[in-house]
Length: 482
Image 1 (spheres, rainbow, N blue to C red):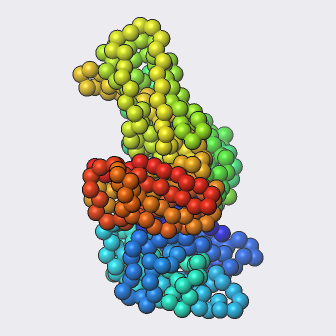
Image 2: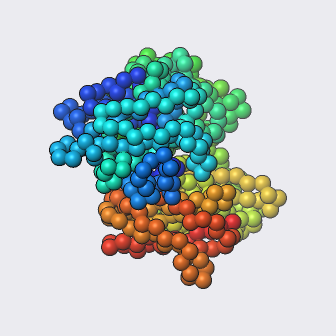
Image 3: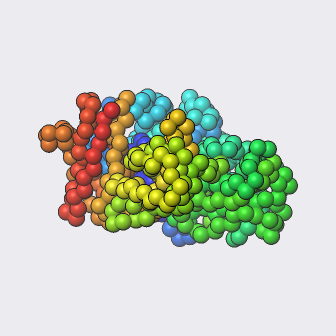
């Protein structure tokens, strides 16, 4: 059984693990929290398909840069945790294949400090001490020197204190601020209170209150995105309008009720009332444990009269269109996009009409949309510099011809995101504006969303082109180093 939302292919895209007091099963598999083995499957495992990003540990005898590896991020619950290495392989040579190296880091991606290094045999463990509860630590798993082609691992992280998700009950609901977002999890939660549809296994609770100044008829929104789960069944969502009283049953009044049983990213709106509080329940479908991003806020209405704002898939692009019936001192529009519905980046600036009292249509094209779901909004800027935003719209585009890349100006790490229907080895090449190759790397592509983290070394400011090619496709994207 494998995680599906992220690959564990880089430090920036690790498998998320929350320690439990036991592995909760006979075979030692535990990914996002208290996950159990499926019945009869005690060889459950996850494939290592990542890159060490140039890291070759001095504490191990093999070369991690030539191996397939897996990155994990573990939130410590005590001053130590234990890495339990299971047995994904059976048959001849299994003992060597199941032997794995685990290197533990503190710090952040791009600035890691090694604090532990262990070579662990099958069905054995090692304990990392000197930790700080609540801090995130990174683990790089790789085959041991005895077998560098063993590309699967079976790992469980345990601690003396099991992870407890915040907001496990309605009475302890996490308070959310207007127009802010945060990362949460229902790993380690228990069944407490109702949801509007389906069964309850591991629900967590949140509360948002509209301020006294909330305009009459104003819309609020809720966004649940970036689901990283231990199954494809995802989360289910209830937004209750019982004010300050906790809902007592599935029949309690609600304004949002969603139970799709998938990794769908949610974005919903409702008309909120001033001083009204809303409880929010997020539960794992059939017990799925996830990390996710949650945002609640105000849908701000533009000062212009906006007739429509739409985003539609157009082949490998996203076509944005909008229309106004009147404009006052309108300098320009900026189309913006986001992968999670909370952090937006500009796409294109479009000149406004200034002042008008008739219908005007506009358009913009995003030629490099995110793989999967992209969120779009319209920013309108007046001549005096004041600006407002439209509501957010979402569009889903799964294209085997889409690649998106960014570069961290402080670390020079280049992150590449790509959705593909191809599975196998690919080559990534980086060219400068004159067409000279400045970096290349071989990566493993899977038939899903792919995330790669590359380290080409110092890059001069300017434009670059990044190309991913394999036997099935060749895709290119522009990269800007500012």
